[in-house]
Image (cartoon, one colour):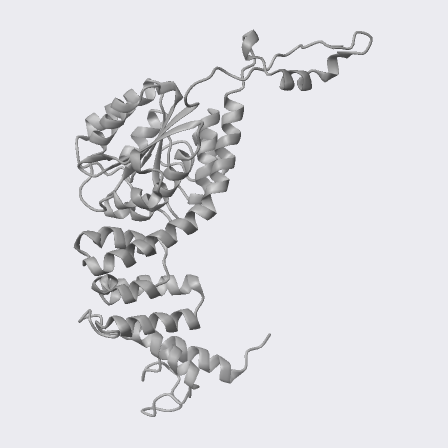
Amino acid sequence: MTVPDAERQRRWRLVLGGGDADGLASGPGEGTQISLSPLDRRMDDALSGLYDADTSSRRAGLGASAPKVARWLADLREFFPTDVVRVMQGDAIQRLNLQQLLFEPEMLEGIEPDVNLVGTLLSLRGVMPDKAKDAARAVVRRVVDDLTRRLEEPTRAAVTGSLNRAQRNFRPRPAEIDWDRTIRANLKNYLPDRNTVIPERLIGMGRKRRALRDIVLCLDQSGSMASSVVYAGVFGAVLASLPAVSTRVVVFDTEVVDLSEHLDDPVDVLYGIQLGGGTDINRALAYCQGVIQNPEQTILVLISDLYEGGNQREMLARARALKDSGVNVVALLALSDDGAPSYDHGVAREYASMGIPAFACTPDHFPGLMAAAIRGDDVSTWAGEQGLVVRGGAAG
């Protein structure tokens, strides 16, 4: 479909902003001749407030008025789709130094929430005025509830299905025989004259334990991992709701904090995280090593970019010790939709040499990752099959 010249010029006018050098003027010194409707001019004003601002002052454009910003945000939601609004909000925070405006309840109530905004709010909450804290928590709650609706059922289905397969016992003791499954599996051996099924294969229910798998999520809370931490907090709460697994969430910078007692509410988990600061992976792994009671039944997911600020040699030795003890260790370089992560390639290669896969994945891949780990599949192979890039080793 051909776009008329007038419409094409209108679109270019909105994109370029109507400056003297935008190439739309009919002659030298005459300025642009493209007229805008009142609705287009409102859209142009919304764009100009952000992208025509004097970023050298870092305070131009929208100014410091929360009501003005609230109106600007309302215009954005009227004129642009949600995903575009989120991009423009991120641009505004970076270009116009709007962190201070995030502290205004009026602005927070009107903002389009997303994972990155939650990371920003969590990192700034220590200096946030009391009047804005309730509004900020409400924003975090909205994002967490949305993520939980999106991620809970896939996680529950993947993990439960894998646990059912993992616990099946084909050499059961008499008291452990699952007669329903055993009969179904051996119906081909039915003898009509004797009205009997000959069971060539016995299927057991597995020996009872308090939890069939122990899962430890160890989260690097440095500022670069903000969106990964938000997703991991939600996943931790979802996993904790499954009775067949025992879930622990540990966060660290140069200190280590165990947030497992807060897993009934992912918002409480996120508010227990202090984004920013240094990184001591060795100290975090030492803590995890101390709380793991059943190594061969434990999955440890280290979510970190692997930039170690502590003792790297000792950290690598501790990771190897965990792996050698039977713990299924996985290093996630990122758990987000943010694209290719920055990470320490040298440490990733060292992990790969120990048989510890290191790769980034999106939140949509995480349930499948946990299912593969619970089944005892080779996680590097699983990641390659999903098109994920395993760093420092097996796959490209």
